[in-house]
Amino acid sequence: MKALEFRNVSFSYGKDAFAIRNLNFSVEEGEFVAVLGHNGSGKSTLARLSDGLLEADGGEIFALGMPVEQKNLYEVRKNVGIVFQNPDNQAVASIVEDDVAFGAENVGLPREEIGKRIDFALKAVGMETHRHATISRLSGGQKQRVAIAGVLALKPKVMILDESTAMLDPRGRREITDVVLRLNKEEHITVVLITHFLEEALLADRAVVMNKGEIVMEGTPADIFSRHEELLTYNLALPRIGQICKGLREGGIPVGDTLDVEKLAEEIAQCVSSRSI
Amino acid sequence: MRIVAEHLSYTYNPKSPFAVKALDDVTLTIEEGEFFGIIGHTGSGKSTFVQHLNGLIRLPASKKRRPKRPKAKKGRPAPPATVLTVGEFDLSSKKTDFRALRKRVGMVFQYPEYQLFAETVKEDVAYGLKNFSDKKLTPAETEAAVRAALEIVGLDYGEVAEKSPFDLSGGQKRRVAIAGVIVTKPEVLILDEPAAGLDPLGKREVMELLHRLHREWCKTVVIVSHDMDEIAENCTRAAVFSEGRVVYALPPASLFKMTDELLALGLDIPLTAKLCAALKERGIEVDCDFTVEDLIRKVVALKGENA
Image (cartoon, rainbow over all chains, first blue to last red):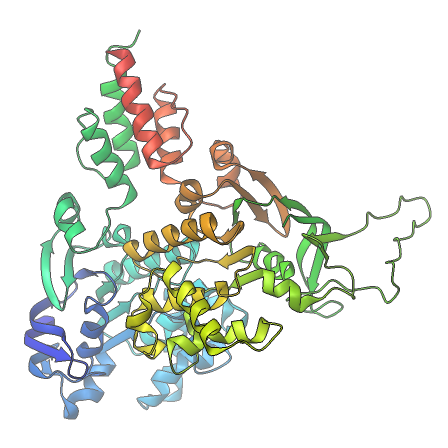
């Protein structure tokens, strides 16, 4: 079964241009998909359409086989969780465990079950020692992990991260990507990671690039990165290592495209030192 | 304006169970004309430090006109006196005109677009100007200043002036917020994570904008950043904060040679430095300033020599 499926979906905010235009997109269950695109390319709209926060103007959207529409929203949202961008405005309670419990309480789970879910969710994100901590005293990465735990407590099948790492420092960003990767591999949760850090997209099984509400590139992350010129036309800059590879080639050093520093160093070494004394 | 801090310490919530020593005997000088970087991870004291620079956090001022020299305790030398000056402003004195200081030291917080509030871009940018000017400005004067500020941040006055700032894109909002700070033409501009959260193109545009401001309007620019590549590419010098102390204050070209030391502090290093380290392991020494261009140039030159 497909975890998410968009059939010919369009959406616009007001009269202006389409935010999403005739979009066909699907995610298999258990897959890890990265969605790339510059600001305003329609990435977040895609996330919000997926669990009915926005209603499509045209086309059909299915989550785990269910049509995403008014009468199914409750079921859909139990199964499709979204983690948003800002670590400071997703918490509803002041203490970690209360915040994690919020969603589970809302769907009316029994008390003992909620306790178990909190244990599971906090452990999954590595925050079990902060169960009674005050959220406002946590770091950004920790706050985002609590937000993920809140979603996990509902045991969703699909998790969408809408630029959830954009406001974090490098360490916080790594905390989140580690957790997400583990959830995908161990708990088999389908992950849609929306980001503009091309480096993060490397973790995914598949990457899509959006531009002006349409999917313009699709493939394995490595494949996407090798198509430099195309990425540039969608206002996505190459990761720095890509810039270096490209610059070296233009300077006459035949290195391939890689995202691995060690591999690049090896290639340079072979070329530069082959004739040194 | 030269920024001088000597023996600066600061504790949040002192004498309480939540007391946190944010700055611990910081001594740092930022010369006029620098494009200065401040790095360190969350909680290292960097934000506390920059908030001192325009008096958002004040030193505990002595009531007397001349601050008392700290007294020596028995058997120990007197603790050194705290100094904090920005240009001619002595921030340890109560008599300092903080309003005049803030007019000349502009501060752009993290995610400044969250602070936009007015109905039109024009009004939002003019707000600081009205508050800081000594006399009442004529509408024509205000308009000229707002126009200049919007233009230097790369926005078209005619196009955006009457729009609501909330209808703009993320990158544009940030520019408007920056325009609202630089409209008073501060001599020192301090920005906390100016490029955070923007897409790669937006990042590049903001950094270009800061260089333009540095050339034309603000003599000194200080940025706080987590992005080591950004520091390597843009700054004249950078200070590394760790646990409330300044560990290094060096030009990027020498700072990022200390790969092991920085990693030990839990900091990242620029990609270029990682590549240089990997090449060094393979017996290739590349002496570059850690910008992408220079690295490519030096490696290509090495190949030339060997051929």
